[in-house]
Length: 201
Image (cartoon, rainbow, N blue to C red; front, side, top):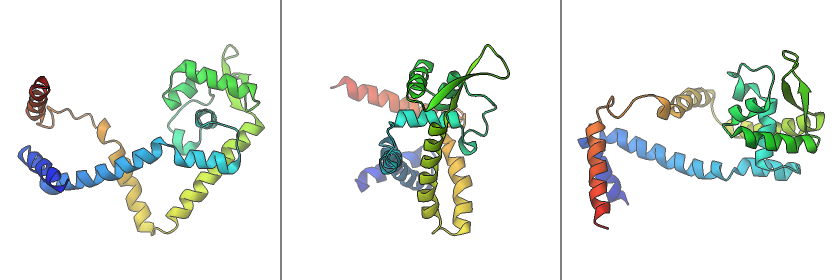
């Protein structure tokens, strides 16, 4: 396995990426892949629902949180009122799926429809007191665990992590194309070599 990484490091060096940068990228990728696998299984969400005894699935919880719109997640969302389309946008899901889940939550007494104060023709969605209590309990559970974990970190460690994590989280949104990065020819060659290999199978 290490030999394969060394081959990759050599390939990247020939593309103009320094070996120490590629080694850092390999380390980042390993951490992210392990994190992705844990996030995909939604360990924390399942634990919260289980330990708090909430009769919800994760999709319902996600919609309830999108209706609640906590500031740390949705502070950049200018919407003062939440419609089904707002929920869909916040969660990046299909509006019809958002509508089905909202309807189910309404049927269970966890959400309610109301008339917009800004436009009487528009229907908005709110949480009922029961729905609000569930969301607040889950958020308290989450930050008890996360806060407990970060309590062992020094202030410098916490202050260093957040801006770097925020910066790294936008790497795929940087807008830089392969051509702008001077890698278009390398990627085209890689594509051609792969096509030739696959053609022999």
